[in-house]
Image (cartoon, rainbow, N blue to C red):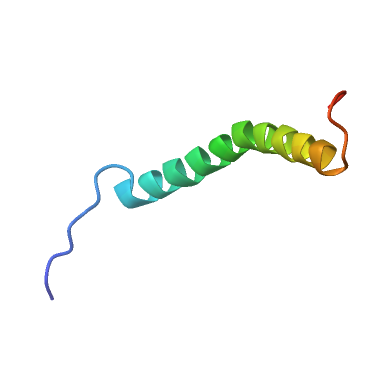
Length: 53
């Protein structure tokens, strides 16, 4: 039987995957309000109002 290497330290692939998922969630958290304001403004313009949007 071949000798199995012992892992010394955390699994790097798991940590990188977790960091990517967290980066996507944080980005979405900050991007969502901007997109929501933009959609609200477009709805206001589409309804025919020029002022008061």
